[in-house]
Image (cartoon, rainbow, N blue to C red):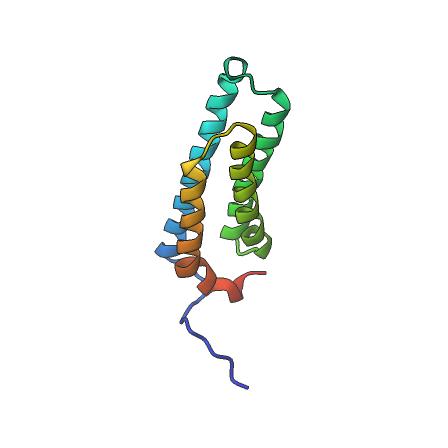
Length: 125
């Protein structure tokens, strides 16, 4: 049976893939910036220190997931959105904050994933 291909893709990373990766990394770093800001104000806002160990670990793992995704590793595609949703819910549950950076990042991942990442799925290991 002939394999159907809907995309004429090659393993070379084009501008769309690189720009999608850059946008996802930008909003991930923006989320990290919000976490750093909260850490600076943690005594004033009465946020426990253990929260920051977890949230900064999630931030680092999200960036690692993006880097793995850039190097065509399937685990990065699974890690990044799962950790992004966890990051969003931790802010929402523990701090009662709705992070628009996380929501925007999830929409970017979904939108760019359909246009730039998913067409290269057969190259992921």
